[in-house]
Image (cartoon, rainbow, N blue to C red):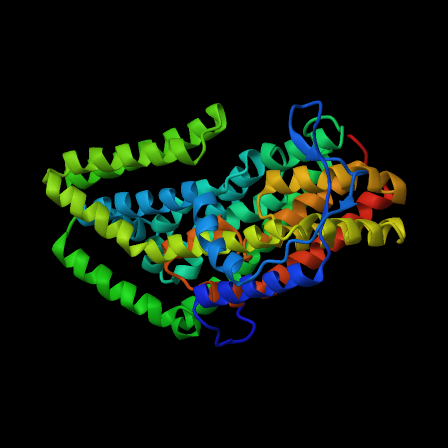
Length: 465
């Protein structure tokens, strides 16, 4: 699925260049702002009729240099989560339990490895569609990468199964409270209405994602050197072989450790679905798992602490990338240009036929997602404007919600401003440029499919049910 091989700078350098570009825009685009109000659900949203010009706040050199620390502060929870996960997985990795378990699973799936992709991606897609799995996918990356490599694939497949799987489910959401729930509430639609057509959207985008990954997997299985991460994976295999030699066999202690891990994963899923756990609770759960594993494996206190620090140290680069990525949003927000962009784009949409208007809403949401990668944040920013605009151009509010969820969901898997995307790639140690180059053709397909799926919604005047 690789389009072209691009020689791009380091991820941090690339993000910094985007920061400079956005800073330049703050000198060109006039300042503007919508008033924020509290709606009937008690949520702060923009007042779509309140746009007014404000004094521009051009972001100069000093503001540019300040933005990374502001970005790090705003994403401190994600950064801390990444570092804690890295530390905990380092403890588990040092016991040899993960490698031993992966080898055992590989033996059991020998000759049937193809089922891992459709089954795994469907499962994660359901998680993304039902409860909006996002940050929760990060721990699974460290499990599926060695599993994919054991089965003869590469680390991109290991990322794609959980991350791309959850991503397509998030984009084709069925009951996602963070996107569908908030957007429909703002649009004054019955909660989680329109389920039948939404189910068809979910099925189509999930199927396309699975088929694309299986096609790529077949290619890599046949010729591993075609993988864009071939050299990176060779180093992984050398390291894993060394660790396998040090921890041979699948002992009773390994079984207990993996049981602790699996119970922890089950508790995480239950906590997210039942109690709306977020990063803080999940990080606490994994930290407890790491301590429990250290006790069961009879590691000394110093060994546990050293392993934890080593694992966290390996992910400092990923943590910095997350903070710098957020700095792009900091610059645009401090420069007072986000609302201005929203205002002019919405004015442009109002001039078109309903079908093209709906498709332009999708394009607009895709663009805004680069600046506001939070699904709930984007809903609060855009839906108070998109809902009345939909009425004006002859598009149902349900269709406007669909344009939002796809515009928010598809690009979440590739944009460098997403803390989750950069966190996942940091954990996987795959450069963003490599991932983006691999995923871009599929993103184009998703965008085209999104445009097509909006047409029936407009033609049938898709309403609340």
